[in-house]
Structures are given as structure tokens and as C-alpha cells.
Length: 240
Image 1 (tube, rainbow, N blue to C red):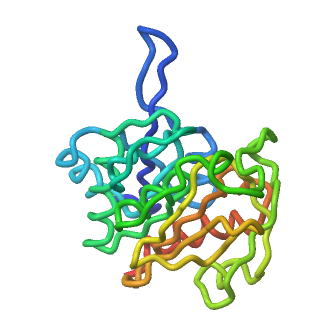
Image 2: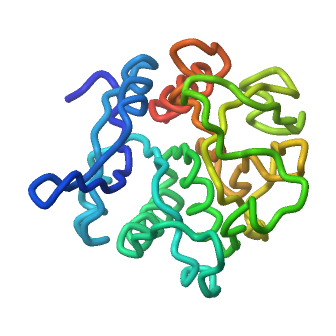
Image 3: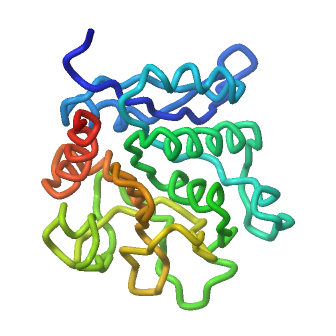
């Protein structure tokens, strides 16, 4: 038995050299989970069947950042600006989304996570903001991860607003892809000034199911609003 909730964090991939490669998660993810009262475990992308067995150990799930989503999963060919993709990871994380919905497991999706969630539910992506969106903000910032870089406007009639109690918040920004066509069962609840969707909520479950385009895990230690977001996600895993 454990007293603190177990939070599964999906893993990306890194290769240092021929002898050092494998699952990678930025340290801010597990540090923020610990800070906010959870116990983090890293979920490598293996077969969907084994992944489901790992998910049974988890009280909540974080879809983490990382590589671009392969456009084949939303019916498109690759376009100029598309970065590195790992279809195997995409497939596993789509199965994670389906599991979380079926079993109403609380889920917080971050950066790539919001994009993967949108694709899993039938939406599409902007494959590269700089080459596609005119007059876009610089969403892939060069500032440190723990520095906010632009404003987002939050819909007042949303769970995200209930958490923040503010309709305009500062966020960090480390992405070059974004939601294009929103999946039918998702609702956009925050946008940047250039119209890019910055947060969505799933509308058909009662459990915590929020996705943000920024990186609250890297702001949690210094920003009370982002710490509140992660804390309420973790707290939601203990509700019956």
C-alpha cells in the first residue's frame, strides 16, 4: 500500500552514443510531482499491451513533451519544418489516452502531450508554426525552461480558470507544433495572442483531463499558479 499517489510519466528517447541510449524525461517532471505530493514513475514506450499493465500501477498519468507526432496518425504527409518523430511512441501514447478515458484515470498532458491528445481524439496539428502561421509569436523560445515568456488568455468558464482564478497568465514556451483542427470532444480553454491554442479540456469525463501547451513542471517551484495546477491534478487522483 502507498499513501501518496503514483504518477506515471511517459518517456521520450535520447541517444548519447552507441552505448548510451534509452528513455528520457526531463528532471522537472519528476521533481514537480514530488513537490506537489506524488510519487513519479517513468513509463518507457514498449508494446501497448505491456504499457496497459504498467498503467494499472498508476493513479494518474502525465503525457510529457518530446518528439514531434508522426503526421501519419492524423492523415497527413510530412511538411517542411517537421522534426524527429517516433511512431512507436505515438502508438503507445494513443493507447494510453484510450485507457485513461475508458477508466477515467486523471491525466495531465504537457506540450507534445496536448498535441498527442488532440491527434488521439481525431484532431490535426500545425506541423511547424514558423513556416505555417503568419505573424505568429516565437513559441520555441531560447530562454531558460523556468522563465515565462508570453501571455495566454484563459476562458472563464473552464476548469483551468477554476484552478488559476485568473483569465490571463504568463507561461513558458518550448514548442514549434500546435493544435490545428481541434478534436471534436476537446474544448479550447486558453489561447496565445496569435490565436494558437494553449490549453484544452476533455468534455466527456468527470475526472481531471487537462492539457497545456506550456511546461508547468518547469515553473512549479517558483510559480504558485503552475504549482497549483500540478497539485490539483495529483489531488484529483485520490478522489473516489
